[in-house]
Image 1 (cartoon, rainbow, N blue to C red):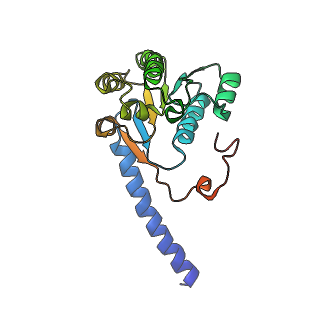
Image 2 (cartoon, rainbow, N blue to C red):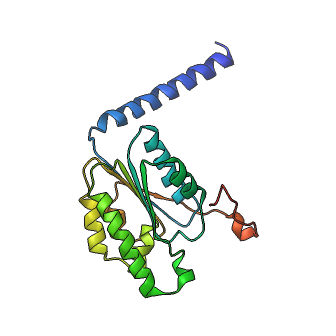
Amino acid sequence: MTDKDKKQQSHQKKMEKLKDNVDASIAAADTERGVFILLTGNGKGKSSSAFGMVMRALGYGYKVGVVQFIKGVQLSGEELYIRDQCPQVTFHQMGTGFTWDTQDRSADIAAAEKSWAIAEKMLADNSYHLVVLDELTYMLSFKYLDQDKVLSALKNRPQNQSLVVTGRGGGSALSDLADTVSEIKEIKHAYNAGIMARKGVDY
């Protein structure tokens, strides 16, 4: 047997074992329902990942709801595209911008509650296949919204509705409720090297 044949044989055995493990995991997953995905951490890409799932859902013709907390003063590529090209997406922005820019707690709370009322309706509507609550975690961290009320709405949404929540922090109760939690860790960021945010990449 040549070295090439030995390498192929070894590779085939490894792949057969890997396939058996993957097949077993797929077979064990026998529950059909919507999932709650929490995308957190200090790294870049949480909202980008969420909007990737929006595009994925739209590919199957599903109805999607998006509420962006914090963002809304500066235009973003996803906002421009969704508003112009995706009528099947219900899209709402809190519109106040970053809370560290507004520095007006009362106004921020009022805006958060108004936006949450829209999100709450989505979470109670089984026609939405996917709901994205972008930067919701800040609303809990800053205590702009009642945590128990928010968690109850997330938990009691329609069984087949999937949910994506993004943002740093948000508390352990939110993490405990989620089915999938991904923490995006920053290794390095172009901004810290003095490179400006890039249109079409960062916003």
